[in-house]
Image (cartoon, rainbow, N blue to C red; front, side, top):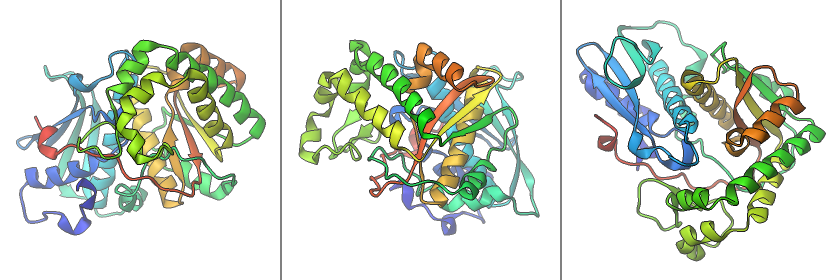
Length: 338
């Protein structure tokens, strides 16, 4: 199992390639849209580079036609990777879409030969990479201590990405109504549900990708019909479920940026995963909900209704939940290496 990896497994006496493969075993545990795992990695031993590519065969051509969620997923993988590198004292630098390469590289990480001497706060997040999970079970109504939110926010290590927490119930209710409209629109679309059905899995699945319905509340035997159920779910029912999840969450998270491009999306994914790991340390679940961003009218009204400066490019709920679902599956490391 991919989440059984331990710090003691680090191959400290082996070569650069072995060490980087170990680091990437944490990267692949990152959250990603529909659990498509839309990433490819390359280890360049000569130059001590790690490259992250988008796997174009695993993008969502209908629901993510601009590849925003795919690039956010790459950013999440990057976050796990740099936390692991930091934990094991590697010095590194990050470059987005390097211009000196003819390859379709989204992220280049240069890993220095020298080890760093000081410990940064990122290493504190390392134990939570294998514990973080997206949770769609109903939240419990409980306020988050301001100090906890402040502690989570400090892990936003990118000045180009702004963090907004929403705790006011009246504002949460307004946003919940916008989420209702976005999800109703999506689930009224036959093409959207057809694509989604291809990635939904039963709770008994042996497949290494896609979304088992562990946190759906549906009895496991019935999840065998998962693809059919998704195609037939009434839009009002799904929209109402999502509205309730938003309204009842302890806090909402919005990430904004002056730019709305693929680099900003990667950076937003990186920040999201760092905040999610920090939330996990406080027994909180930080769960992404892309619908309100992907639906242009809802995104516009979100920006307008709470006077957001910049572009909202990511949305998530932060909540306490009594139940913790199983982790979603992962493909084997050899499937990701090019």
